[in-house]
Length: 276
Image (cartoon, rainbow, N blue to C red; front, side, top):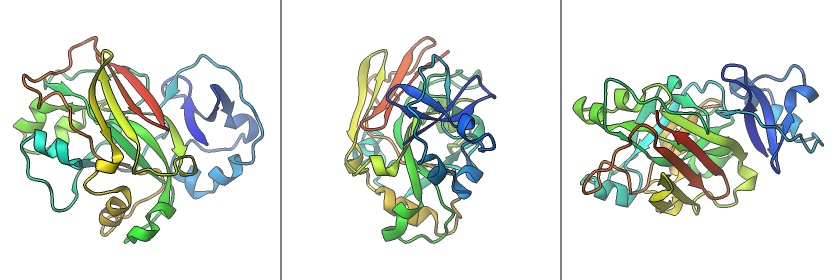
């Protein structure tokens, strides 16, 4: 299944995306919650799996596929070549940071460039959506806690990131986590550790990697993160980016107003965002 949220910003409804058509889940279940913690906790994923509805063609905005995650946990330097391009040591354990909920942005919405920081950069990433609460999850059971996957752009304001000597502000400006276009349930992706992911700026490929090149794979990340941090339904783990970001190019290439970034992951889809 492909879970989406559609409608104007702040008024999104839960839906399914089927072959270019949208199924309005509220038409089948008027009391269905928005896609988030209670949606997964209360078994709605199983209920909507029984819907036999081809959907309708709609020209309508898609919002972020998840409403208000309690946590957006991100990985730094989780691809070998990305660590090398920045001149960093390869981490011996997962390097975690967070993005705040104000960063959540739709798959085709604009990204507002901040006034307080320049050097805006792109990072295509595989995002994992948690569907079940868990703590101290063993690696061999990690996929029992996953509901699906999305594309995410971990937009980064490098000026703030490097000037602050920590990553919180530079990663958490409004709209800095466009995601989607849908939550693709895990049954549709047979091997999450072998997917091509690319980022294009104005149609030119800048990043071209594969999830098999992660230093710490998805199961390892879930085991590590959940040791002392309870994962709850709707949490997002964004698993790091391959080489090819703008700041480490020679000379650096940073985004300018009007440019368009497209992030793609095979089997999941693409998000396309204009920077304004």
